[in-house]
Length: 182
Image (cartoon, rainbow, N blue to C red; front, side, top):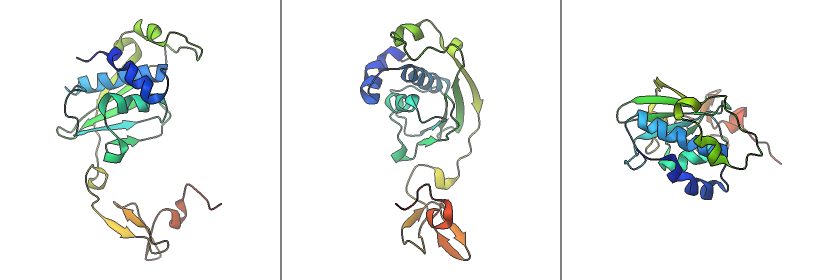
């Protein structure tokens, strides 16, 4: 089984510094993989990860597993929680791993590795078997559907369009944009 210390340098280089989020993210990934009978050295092309935060541990997940959003295998569910779920598409087995609220180091912690070495996974993490249902249009692979927005003309993939008054629109043109014109 992989040791979390083996990923510290790579995580630090990828993220820009080493912090508690990186250590927790590494340990969460290794625990999740282990619970599914996988390791970072395996071919993880059937692995999907659902991150419940967009903070430091998200980068650790990429470093340990190689799973990326561009391959549609990394999904963000912004719950603001230090947790992530792992789904093996080959077996449909899934597990959710979360960081416990305690211990909680201060932001001025100088020896991040030393702090976290004092705790076993059982002390800092919790986990449970779960079920994740993935609709076909959310699975990795080529787009299943592509339609042009009848207002802006941009293509909309995989059922992310909306039908308003008989017109097919992208979410932005349907009034659900995350941005406004400057």
